[in-house]
Image 1: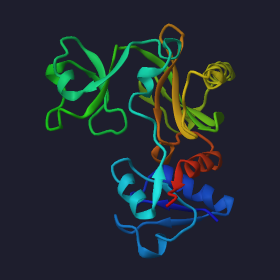
Image 2: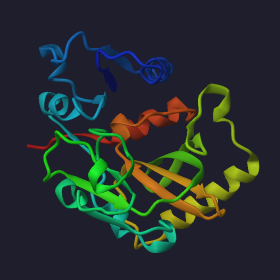
Image 3: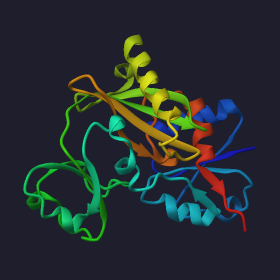
Image 4: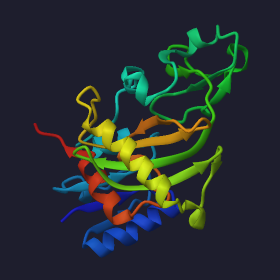
Length: 245
């Protein structure tokens, strides 16, 4: 029986996943501290859902390998799936930017992902840290997609014109859903696009109506928004692989 392991931080997502795990017959353990207790270290099928900052340490204690996208995944995508120029560089090199560009850490939220010039980039971070730098585009709507074995499991709109959606606002039209599924299906069928076994793909429409990839995220820490939590959990489970010694 899988055991869903949640961190001490209470969120709407963890509450939703806890209830979904109960419906699926899973066990759930809410950690009381930022250390894995001994009785959880020998579980056969632990499923970790955790913040990116703490997940690697928890995974080490649970003997788990967390499936995460490579930092340069967006950079290697064919242009028809990005509709913008993107490069992977370092924070130090990005400080030379003279015009405003969209800058974000590729795999965490150590500083806000937004438009920066070199002079406005945050200080106090290692200049060797990797960052993605892309030309500025305007997103009309953005969708989160949970994928397993290159198959779309569940999805939800999460942003409209840069505004985060909540609860009833997670609704999307049939036309939007059909167009999103068509775009994602084309990408999933393309042998040039490498994807982990279990992952989260964010896609959206640009202001001119084109569909494009926003980013890829690790399933074990991604927000679920309006996605079906019972279909999210198997993706999270597949993204937490027990190490083989």
